[in-house]
Length: 173
Image (cartoon, rainbow, N blue to C red; front, side):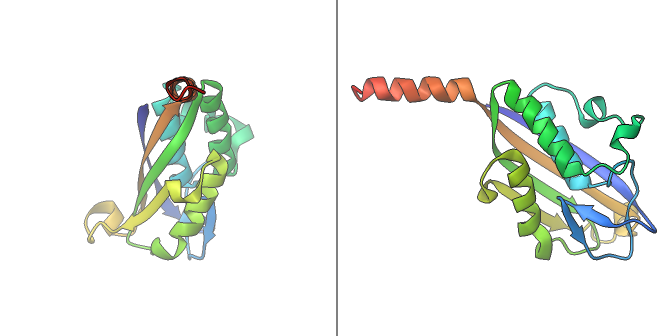
């Protein structure tokens, strides 16, 4: 089993839609970025790539590449998952914390979890998304942007196959 951690932050920007965890959230401002600036999807992408030892989102989807301009970050997450899958890993679970004064994350958490789960081919109950404030402190507390921390647990598919075979042998099957 391997654990990966991801972090992302973006400033708020006028004239952009707010997308978090693949869900468009009604807000006066969105986030600034080369893609759709989905900080949740970016943090999860970094976490799964890191857990598999495959670098980070900037290595695979560099902001200097016009191909990723305004890209759907859930699609980037799905692409990253396919890289991880090709290394014979599967995602066990994802835990995400969104740090923002606003918007409130709770009303959108289940929808975000479902979008992330779909991109990773896992059950929605295997994805936790929660929101926290920064209690008015620092740049987040002043409402300048959003930060996200994500943790992912991967398991080796090969280890699972070997374990299954051992259990079958022990059972005399």
